[in-house]
Length: 401
Image (cartoon, rainbow, N blue to C red; front, side, top):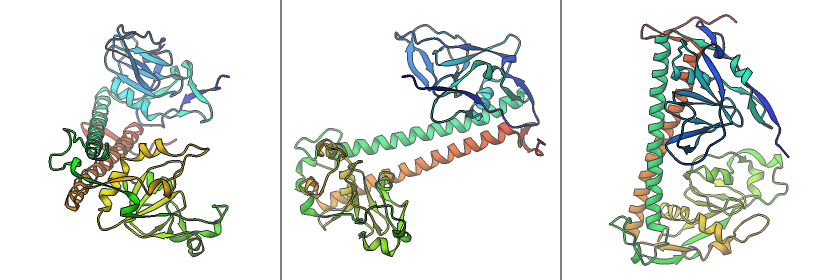
């Protein structure tokens, strides 16, 4: 049975002080073709971007490929030879007509497809041909495109830095923990550490493990919620990046009476559905029985232990009892093997990994802010409350509608 489609329409931009043009006046709207397959260095472009490569291009000039099905209306700027697939349209410039292609890409990016979420949207060619877009002067088109390109390039660079930091953290954790301190030390293990010499113990021997609690059924009884006591859920742990700093629910005193409060510094581990997510509480909190609290003794650094437990997620999921809903319990966790380096090594490892995490979080936030800057600048420049006249930014009076 086919999933129904709905014709998507790109919402026209708001009124501006610029002239405007119909897209079909300056471009022919062409259909892409089925992926020819093979191999080569010519990108095959679909509604969601490049998804393959081939040897012969369908288009030999810079173009904008626009999603026709699936991601309907999403544009992709392709500056070299390409092969737009049969789920897309592409733009062919009409003779004697010129619009800065980067400006047009951003102008199309600013539009929002008008389609419902319960069907696969499809964009019709006549809607695209009738689309009216703003037309600043050539100089202003070029300047707008340059500004937006610089912000986007900075955003992509920051995302690459974020990815590199994440890979560095994962590589360091894998080199130390992936083999659970096997007798073979990999060449990529930091030189100051020798996992082959670490003792092994069981989690239950070096930590107190306690299950969360919320005894009332149904769980969503409103009279227990809305107080001042944090009540974290599995999603809060999964989003924490190792440090649980926020919560999505609270309990009142009646709710706390049927739950259990865990102190700041407790390692929290998810044991139901989404198994093996971990984080350290940065505030006192209650939580339900889909989570356990782990409190290590004086022989184990809690930050070191949390980083180690992160690397055990895949193995815990592999070994978890298979049932209607995958879950584990205290008996599963008590004998779980844990490496026990000398205390000084534990603290150094925890410090080094936390340093990478701090830089990673800073990088992620910087990338997020750059994305916000890009979207707000795109909005301002494409709706013309700010104009670029004579190389300077100039605020414009509102346009009457």
